[in-house]
Amino acid sequence: MLLRLLLQAAIAAAPAPVFVVVLHLVLRRGFDAYAQLNGLDVPMHFLGGVAIAHFHAVVLGALVRGRELFVPQRIVMAALIVALSTAAAVVWEFVELLSDVTLGTDAQGGNLDTMGDLAMGILGATVYVALAPQRRSAEAH
Image (cartoon, rainbow, N blue to C red; front, side, top):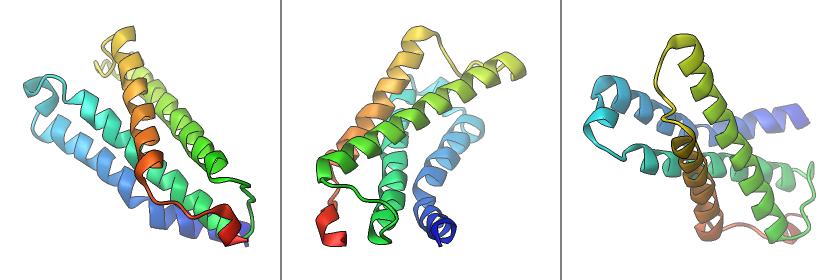
């Protein structure tokens, strides 16, 4: 039951982060937009933070509604969404590093760029949590 619920929620939530990754690839490879538009990386990481926060909100919301997860207050749910989204941003940066080291790409422009990318992802997740309507966990129980 839990695995099925997780799979259904993940499929429902996947279009947002998939859209951002596809947009990133099209802009980078199709239009070389990152070279043409200085600073495009900043809004893309912000958008990635919003998309991954939406993904986590949908999945966690499904778990709460399915009574597989109890979240006592909205603030706890918000903190959990931001924490999971922060972890996803860190993983993204590790993938960029791995790409640079193994494939010779130049995805990371140094420490300042990496920290900025992380900050934008976290900010995007935080803005999502602050602005997105969320069910109160008590209503789900």
